[in-house]
Amino acid sequence: MRKFVKINIKHVDDILEKVSLCNAIELKYYIIYKQLPIIGNLSVLENIALPMSYHKGMKIKQLISTIQDYLNIFNLSEKIHNRRDTLSNYEIFLVKYITALMFPVELILFIMPLDHVGIEHSHHLMDFFIKCNENYAILDYNENYDKYAQISNIIKLEYDEWLTQDLRV
Image (tube, rainbow, N blue to C red):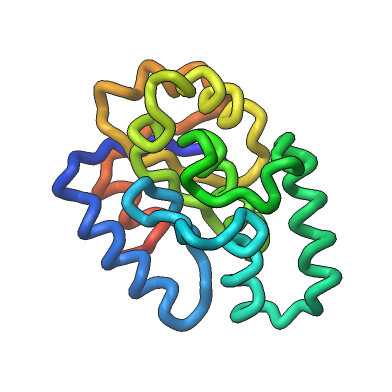
């Protein structure tokens, strides 16, 4: 299911806190947000592998193979050993998304993704959301809704309505 949730900047801390509480027992939601960065002194491979090594206990060869498969899907295979400072904002966004795919979560939350990728990559972002098959919610300013309206079957929700329906708080 694809959702657009109308928020303002004051909601972000509330979202982070509520999702943290919801994820305390079982990981249900994965947040992709500009203010939650990838680690600058680690490579793309290491940034994706690090959380996986803690949560899944996969063998290193299997982990690397899985990460390489995802990097190939998103045309990032040549960036596997790159550090954050050599990646575009959109590539950083994709690294975070690939990390999210490694976890069996109910919903991926994209908080203000246009701010994350910048105007120069907004067309890539829209193509990404149109093709994305995962359950996700885009949490962004109401004035940005028209940009997301081209995504088929996207449901627009008010913030409080979304909290009740998806986070059940």
